[in-house]
Length: 207
Image (tube, rainbow, N blue to C red):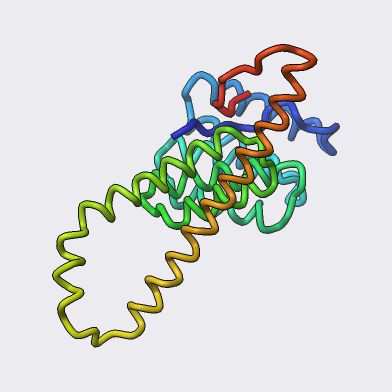
């Protein structure tokens, strides 16, 4: 899966010079792999202004690097659902990464879908969603012998059958989203090639 990233110098003029300084110190610690130190700085920065989403976003990024994946995912999802427009798409993408690392793949898939809907040419989100879809296909193939045996048994659980149908709809929706994203990517690539030549194949999201 592609790597997490932080917000560093995308900040507008902050209300407090102390907040800016703490964010810079946190960013320097983060890029030196001192994630615990970075987390402390970001938490201090967040105390200055609860309405500014950037420190909280970076808190989640540091939690991810410290392998607190569920905590990171919850923060990213909170930011995404609050519709902080400038970081909403990035929040969904990072939440997808965090859920994947926490082995919560259905939630990861949903986050990547939302990230793609907000930015259809996001190659990293498209790639990660495709990885999840392929993993699910492989798992289903390996489970087929047992599923075939189960077909010969009476179905005593209608709820399970309904859940399977819902999963199939979700899978179909994910495939449609990937297809839309690919079509958008091809259009964008065609326009870029006319002006600039071949686009870069780099899909990692980092600053």
